[in-house]
Image (tube, rainbow, N blue to C red; front, side, top):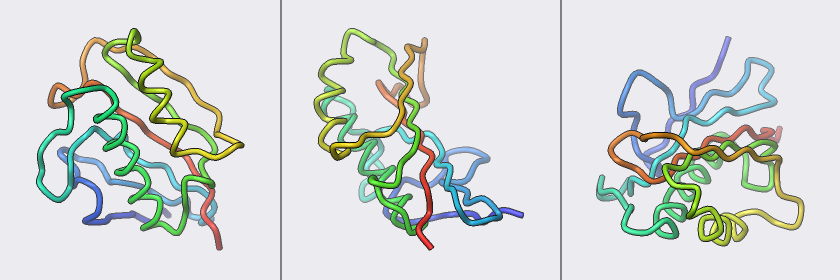
Length: 129
């Protein structure tokens, strides 16, 4: 059994997936990969890696909040980028979203992302009971 998480504060799914899924035990949420779509306008915020990263992490934060978790509860993040030469700039924005004890993270370069996004981020977080 799984509990589906859905919020209008993050972009709706653009395919056959859920924004987030909480495990049946209710202890973890797995977010879908988020790209830099502004849920209020449906527009991509993709002009710079900084702008894109900011929007992606706002989307992740909204999904976590809908599940009863926060960025402080994130255990693992995977970052997908189309250009790792932008890693340092992405990292500056990323660091603002996580406190002094950031989660484990992997970052990989990919050939392409949905809708031409520069970055996609997915997270696994503990759900507070």
